[in-house]
Length: 124
Image (tube, rainbow, N blue to C red; front, side, top):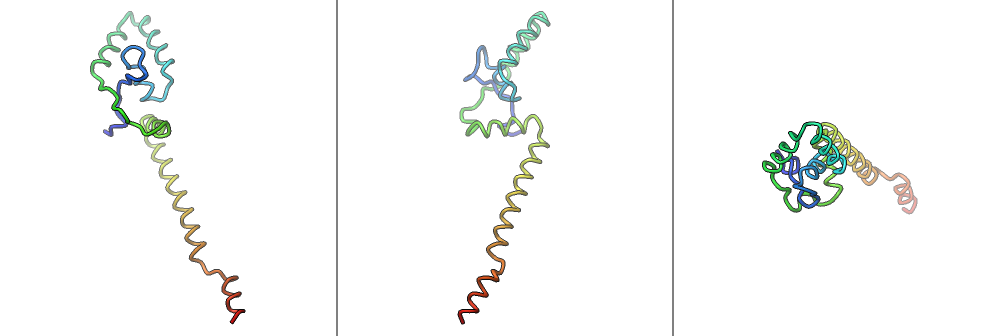
């Protein structure tokens, strides 16, 4: 498993122990909604979810510093975690588009420029 696809506690954005902010980073869901859901679950399950919350906080590793180089990379890895096949298709599509554009450029520069050749012939 890649370092960027694992679940980590996010202590930088944490309110209590970083579980909800880590889940927000992992899933791409806003942390506030996960926190509201956790409070709701705490009341609905008579505290069982609080035990699970502390268990996750105890077992999960802290998020390494510099895991992502920027917000764009963070969004990309969230997409990979949520739907790997769609992310693979998007990367494949991007590379296909780049390859097509490079082929067009190559064709433009390596094809015979008849107008230029005609002008050179007329000067002879």
